[in-house]
Structures are given as C-alpha cells and as structure tokens.
Amino acid sequence: MASERLFDLTGQVALVTGASRGLGQYFARALATAGANLILTSRRREDTAAFAAEMEALGRRVVTLDLDVRDQASIERMVAAAEAACGQIHILVNNAGCNVRKPALDVTWDDWNLVLDTNLRGSFFVAQAMARGMVKHGYGRIINIGSVTSVAGYAGLGPYGASRGGIKQLTMSLADDWGRYGITVNCLAPGWFKTAQNQVMYEDPEWVEYLVDRIPMKRPGEPRDLDGAVVFLASEESRYVTGQTLLVDGGISTGATRATVRKKT
Picture: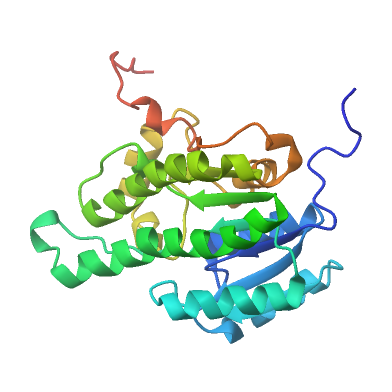
C-alpha cells in the first residue's frame, strides 16, 4: 500500500552548495517545501542571508556557511561546522558550479582549471567529505548536479561539457563505492534553463527561437520543472535508484534534429 506521505522530507537535513542564487536556491526551496531543514553554502555566507530568511519563514531551520569548493580546507571546515550544527546530514545537493563560454581555440589554461576545479574536483571532494558522516549513519542521498552537456556536446562549452560529463561518470563510480552503506548517488541533469550564467543568450530572440525549435516540449525549462526530480532523488522513494543521470531537459537530449520537412501553413 502506497504511503500517504510520499516524498516527505520532514526531519531531514539537506545541504545545498552554491545556494547564493540561481538553481541552487530553487533546489533548496523545493526541499524545504517538502519538509527538509537546510544548510546553505556559498563563497560568502552573507549572500544567502535574504534567501535563508525566506526559508525560515516556511518554518524551516536554516544554517548558512562559507564554502569555496576549490579549497579542500574550506570543504573540511564547512562539513565540520555543518555536522556540529545539525548532527546527521541526510541529503547533499552538489550544485556549486561555474562556466566559461568560449570557442575551443580561445580557452586558456586558467579557464580550464577554473571550470574543472569548481565543477568536477569540487563536487568530488564535497561528496567525499559528506559521505564520511553518511557512512557512519548508514544513510545518505547525494545529488550531483550535471547538465544536458553531460550527454551531448555543444560548441563553445568544451571545459564545461568535460566537467559535466565527468560528473555523470563520477556519479556512477560513487554509487558503486557507497551503495553498501545505504547511500544513493545520482546526477540531476537540467537542460536549457535561464540562469545568471547564460542569461545573455536568452536576450537574443533569434537564439531562443533556434533553441526552442530543437526542444520537443517547445520551450526552455522553468525552475519549477526541477522540483519533482530533486525531491524524488532526495527522498526515501528513490531508495533503489542509484548511479543514474536524470535528464530534465524537455527532450532535447533525444537528438532534437528534424528528419522531416516542416509543412508551411
């Protein structure tokens, strides 16, 4: 018999990295709406203050912490502070990330290191540090945030695509490593959503028309489209789902190339 309280996160603690803006805040809001208390991290904790107050108004406990995912000492300090404040942490949303959008011939050594160190190396070492506590408690939900670029190549996104493809592979490896401890590790991969990183592209009507033509659902993603996916992967209902990449992309990863001539009307 199905539970009457499916996807209920009441009493759970969720830690969301990169929570100062964008999709990180949408992920955190969805988890809080489902009942979770929150730990919000960003490079400057004051950048999360207004959002933390909004979540507290929902009746949730909220802790804000500094975190630079490119600095291992910062990761270790953050996890120690999070566990001291909240005890068991049930859910990690590994969201912190960045992008450098350039033609491949123009990508510099420093561009590559910035993107890979933030998106891939940072995600691994945050997950590792969090998993130590999850192993001790015999329970955990790790959600690595990937992208449609985890499974498809796009010109101008070489380092970013490499980092997100790495996240997909890392997710499978960690799922195999930690499944025996009651920890699931999955990748949530959004498609084309308007964020601060790509807002300039959405200001070009011709590009938006080009994009929408290639999305079977015929629109870019809206943040609310991710709510169900992140809550599912954080919940007990996903207990037998691990090592998977869940694409929430309106279908663009199907190939999105017309094989028939469009009829004129």
